[in-house]
Amino acid sequence: MRIVLLGVPGSGKGTQTEAIVNRYCISTISTGDLLRAEVDAGTKLGQCAKPFIDTGNLVPFDIVLGVIENSLRKLSEASSKGFLIDGFPRDLPQAEALDKLLLRLDQPLDIVLFLDVDYEEIIKRLLIRGRNDDNEDTIRNRLQIFEDKTSPLISYYTKKGLLRKIKGTGDVTDISSHISRILDEVA
Ligand code: ADP
Image 1 (spheres, rainbow, N blue to C red):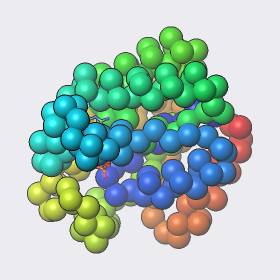
Image 2: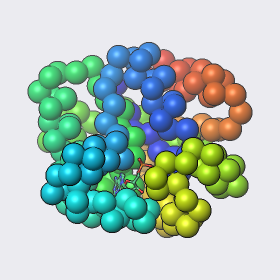
Image 3: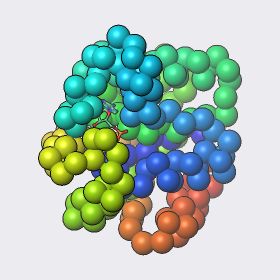
């Protein structure tokens, strides 16, 4: 099963990702995690990405595409049961690039889940989470970027018949069960 998970920062993608990959034995590709790992390892790529991450801006297309391409190739060589991509695509050019890449690998997406949470709830959650880049200015910038650049992907994937929207507030296990019901239909 091949899944893209969309949602604003703090919508609970990380939590739900863990539940989904455990249930369906698929792999996770999180561009945020991959980029942070590059930063921590002090690679050249990480050094280029750091200022963008620190300010909550999108890391340039070529850097992110390289990271995702690498991961998808590795998975496809390992003939895995599928994947869940979290944090990518974040704008239309990334979505189009992903389509091309998956077409080449003959691994089209099965479903795009959109975890829907309103912005007020998000700011509260992220300030509690307190990761390095979770200060109020960066959070506002990330939400604005979601609104401007990522939210057009909702209609992009709706037109392709792939999008399923899930209410991302309330009990975490209720949200997981809702997602499982949807994914069981696809699996
Ligand atoms: P969140 O969704 O909570 O903001 P992520 O871990 O997904 O957290 O992303 C953290 C940062 O990593 C983003 O603010 C951005 O700078 C960078 N990043 C992650 N994924 C992408 C992507 N697909 N394109 C560009 N930048 C990205």
